[in-house]
Each structure stands twice: as structure tokens, then as C-alpha cells.
Image 1 (cartoon, rainbow, N blue to C red):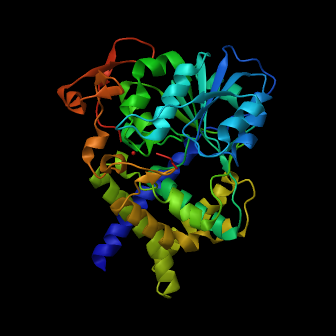
Image 2: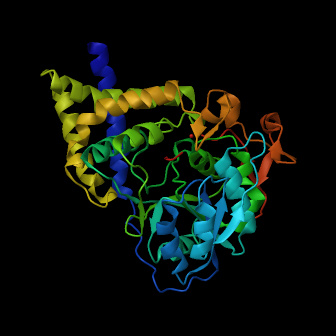
Length: 410
């Protein structure tokens, strides 16, 4: 018990230090509706079997005067996604079959970026609900940053779904701190692949999607990889301008978000073990002891801290309800799912099953490839010999390419 208490005390200090970074969190960026961006903006949306959701994403984009074109990359959809997107007025790119070694989304994104005519590219998932001004706001941040990612407000369908979703979200805050403040190490950087913006020329030079082509949590892998190249990466709060309706039920949250929430394929085993320990000791254990009627004084402090975080997370939901308030009770459940995802990460997504390296079961997945081949890049062993990459603006090399850390934040 003394050993557990000592470990819990150390973990509590780590979490407190991470949460304290919220004091340096920049305010959410506001609407840029009606403002004409300095450069044309192309929006790229990868889509596979998104007929039921994509129209709500396309409509505001096609009505936004700041957006010059909307490109939907149809990634082998088996429904009417492509036809619906074309009827709505978007430009539809029929995606080619992913080459061997590529995850489908990265391959679709690479094709979409190549097709984009604008110098500024905004990537959005089909389940996002952008508002007027989002794309102009993202483009404006590219004067100070090379890659901008945006955090949305979440749309949840019921109390249980919201409770589980909020508990999952709290594990990310406990492990990485709040979004917004600059991180000290690229290996702890988070990026939300549902919404990203960058300059096309810089991304083409970096060939970022090819270099993370094997990752199922591609967004975090891409952000950490480019940060190591010298890119300035920002994670902004765009809740006022972006909503995401990701899941259909609590079971869907457990299955879909839970498959990648451990960030197994971009996290070293030591750091992953540390993340699990932090969540179990500071989030799950206090709830379990409270349920058993034997909480320690430190448990009560941690429970109070968790309640404060719950209040802070209200702004992350379009309609915060009782589920959010009850989410701390599901922290042991979230810790179990996090552990399962770390030990047995999912390898199937959108009807495709990928190799062990895509889920982080083979550490080779985290090696940055360096030699070009017909499908993008090859020979990942070349990266270990010290190959270097140019900076985002085409300048001199900005340091050695090293293994990217782990997304998703899906």
C-alpha cells in the first residue's frame, strides 16, 4: 500500500503539472465570416461510405465565400457518397486503390492535396460540421504556424454516450494536458486529423502523408513527424466554428474511438506504460476506492480535481448534459478500454484490415521512410542512417528524421 500511495502521489503531481498548463491556453479563435482570405483556400475531404453524413459537411463549405473549391476524394465507397457529393457541387476525385503498405485515408489525402488548386489546404473529415469563418480563421493562423489543427465541439446522442465520450476525453487531458499551450517535446504533441490546415507547397515537399502511410493514427504521427522536421505546429480551440458528430451510440464510442485512443503506433512502450499508470492511479483508482467506501485523502483531492476538469469540459460539447456530470464514474471503464487498446490495438477500419505495423505491433511502423518508390516512399531503414528533410518553406534541412511519436485523436 505504501508503494501504491507513493506511485499515486507521483502521478498526481504529473497530472497537476499538465493541467496547470491550461493557464497558458490561448482563447478560442473567433469567426472570420465575411473576411476575404489573402490566398485561395481548397478544402479536401476524404470519404468512404459517408453518404449519410457528408451533406451536412459540404453545405456550409460550398456556401462559404472564403472557400474556392471543395474536393471530395471518394475512397472506394460502396454507397452513394460520390454521387451525393457531385450533386451538392463538390469536385469528386475517384480515389485509386491504396498501394501495398498504405492506410486508405493517407492515400486519399495525398490524392486530394495533389488535386487542390489553392495554395492553402484545409482537411476536414466527413463527420465534421464547419461553420462560416472556419476556413478563413485557419488560413489566417498560417502566417504564424506551418500546420494548424483545430479542436471541435462534440455532438453526442445520449447521456451514456456523452458520459463515456467525456471519460475518454479526460484520459487525453490527463496524459497530454489541455489543447492550446505549446508542448515541450514533439513526442507529446497531439493533432486532430478531423480538421487541419497547411500550405500545399510545403506539404508536397515534405511528402508527409507518404511518410506516415502505415499509421492508423495518422494525424498525430504526421504532426509529430513534421514537428521534428522543424514545422511550427499549433492545436487551436475552434469549438465556436466546428462541431463533430463522430459516433452513433456509447457502443460505437467504445469500439471506434477506443480502438486508437491509446496511440499505440506513435508512442514508445515506456511512455505508453507511463500513460496507463497515470490514468489508473489518478482517475480510475479514486473512483474504485470511493465505490468501496475506502477513499484516502489523496483520492478525495483527485476526485475534486476530476470534477473541476468536468466543468472545464463543458465547452467541448454542443449540449453538455447529465452524462458529462456523471463521466467521472466511468473513469475505471475508460482505463480498461485504454489498457485493451494498448495491449490489443485494432487493425480494421472502414472495412479494411491492415498489418501489424499499422497498429504499432511492429515498431518498424514508426520509422520515417526516406527513399522514393512507385507508391511514395520506401526503404524505411534508410531513415536510421541519418537522412534529413528540408524545412517547411523549402530551406535547409531542419534536423534528422526520427520515428514519429502516436493520433486522433480518433
